[in-house]
Length: 78
Image 1 (cartoon, one colour):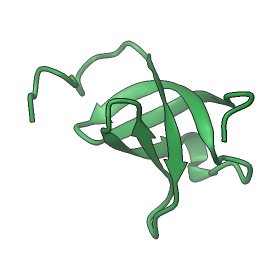
Image 2: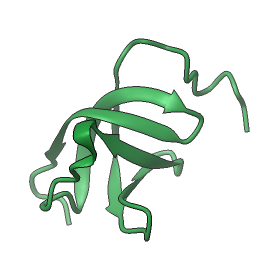
Image 3: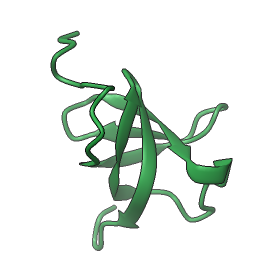
Image 4: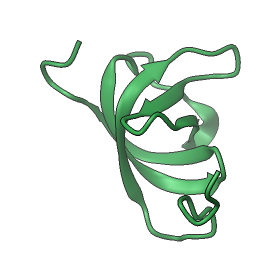
């Protein structure tokens, strides 16, 4: 994996687009580049309607984890 591709020390929020997948430890985002991200939410409250194709804005806090600030479902996506 190219470690310069995802910089966990960055303070800037980024937008990631992809499909939500279920896992025993919480939701995952498989982005359009095929990278799988674990998703973290403030107060650990995962939205019940988090599913399908979404756009997520958040900070990369680890090599495989995004702290979600905002998300929205992409209309018309299956």
